[in-house]
Image (spheres, rainbow, N blue to C red):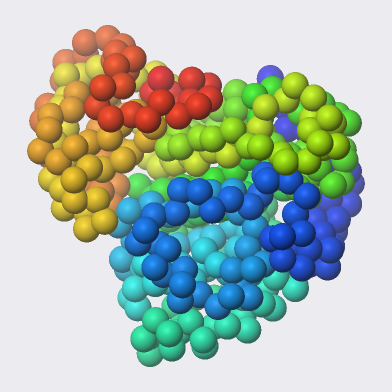
Length: 358
């Protein structure tokens, strides 16, 4: 049975103090775990130049969990902090979209709200399309996030901080619309975190103590009804702190970006029904290739054999109009052979233990 280790009893208050009072900027972090600028696209870097420097200075994240095709969407950012990703998303969803940021730290939300007018005017909008809510990511209902109300949930190095990760993912599936997407970056471990790490307040606050063992993450999602998820990128984290490296011992930590969809009927293995997908090249930010996960890159116009789960992910979601899938599920050919990465996978480190499609 999977284990989600509970850390010290006053975890929320300790985290709020660390991110609200101890840290004054991302330069104060003691490891490289929850502050990473890798993976930001050139398009997003242009938008980041428009975001207020104080918002950027107080950003703590381990990835860039921003998928394609966001115009007009309602997006929920779990653990939004000072609002950097919310304002990036604000620009990407456009004036007809909406962004909701949720955080439990008053000081972080104060910074985010202070610059609401600054970014509204800077993006040329007549009204704000972002709102910030004070609350806990384990209990989105208490702050008014309704069932089936959100197109996309994102989170950047925050879920590891929760002492009840099962409840977090259950809430995410509750608020997502059918066909909606979770796209998040977080710290994962290649083994279960030893108790002395999981109960160390500093290591928890630095996003290490609460890192989920990748296999326990898979088991957790299976328990709540999510049979398939996909790793989109992975890198091993360099802690850059000899004292903390000594405490971590042999544990390897990874910054992983993961996506999953709220779809019925997904199977816990890749099944082959002889389906083939063609990407039309019609996503504006991906004219030549569509990157679904670490070994599914659909190059424009090229036929790609796919399993039934992948077929659902590109035809029963907002991406449907960008693909043509040939074939149906009338004839089953057994397990899908997903060992060939020739369609453009990047061989992301640690990917063998993440997701259903190997």
